[in-house]
Image (tube, rainbow, N blue to C red; front, side, top):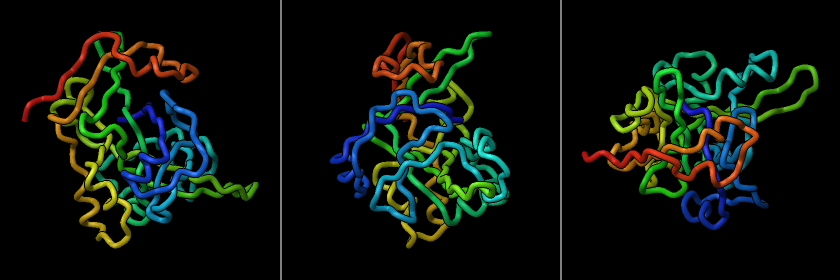
Length: 228
């Protein structure tokens, strides 16, 4: 799964890597969490970074807090599930990130690790999005979820699931409307275990209110890339 991540946006870097414009600025977020408005690039508007709420709300959801249950969308069966089958075909997005957190269970204790690709300073999770309309107020809320899959050998050291991290040269295809759905779906592959690194970090990350660069600094064990 993926329940927290870090994102620091630089307009020039976003434009060079994804061909999208960042209007204004975004404060660094080292503890991005569900229900926050976070940067995405959608297939509907691939030339612009937008800010959507993390936690997908399908059209039929009755209340806003339903999104807390849908921060992740499991790849397995995603094309059949009522909440996801329309977005996966028609409403795909890139969720921008620099690293993500996962917790390794050690007995009754869970140890947080910060994980990142070694070949991308800024990368994208494969995501899906939807605009939910509050039936009582008419307010429109754009939302998203991150797609997850079975862990690769590297991530299995920490957890049995992992987010769908897209290769640098393939991310644009995920949101390209000219790419057939079958070809876009084929991009959902576990990231190379030879291109991932993780480091134990402070348990301060457990509290959403903590948000600073110290959260991603190594504070213990380091997991190096696994050789192919």
